[in-house]
Image (cartoon, rainbow, N blue to C red; front, side):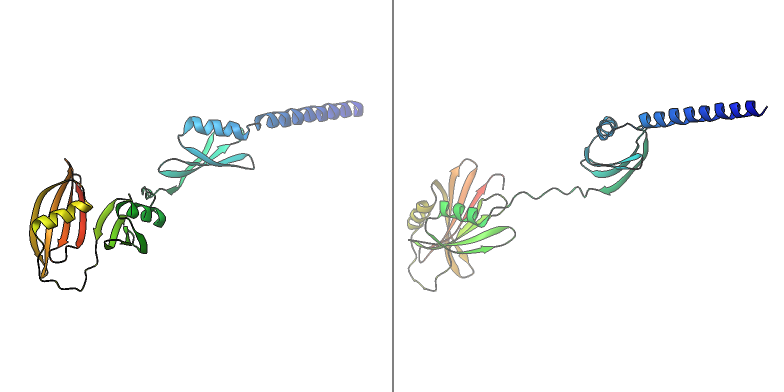
Length: 230
């Protein structure tokens, strides 16, 4: 009787050992999902860019972003099931600002329009005011920071007070020396007690320039360029 009992116990111990070994083996094989397996699984289910995969115990934590949001996905490391799916942040949907023109690029743009020496640069959020000294005087060129376009060319007023008006023909000649094109109109305007010739020049079917000239000194006060899109 005693011998039989010992044999039963031995058989039971062997059976338990075999069961434990098989279970351990199955668990080892079942938990063989790799990081690349998880990455492929997530990509099949969701659109977006996988930023990070981290294994914690027997789960994979996956951070996924798309054009609008960032998500945290928890994947079972054995079955590949999605355990949890949550949004961790939301995009502000703000467009990125386009690259801005540098100071050196703005100087180059200004000197392409007015030849001379740059004496001063004043910067704002929207444009650069570049002071250039040339053979015919001092000019302030306003250059747009976003696209590099020339917004305006002006001359600081002089303190001299002249008494003889230049003629319209003289104003036309002065304007065409700075801006090439066909003159469409010339008007004498009174702007805050300052007499100015306003000369409009067509440069192309959809481009024109307005040149303001001091009616006494003949000095160009400003040049404004416009297109049909403005």
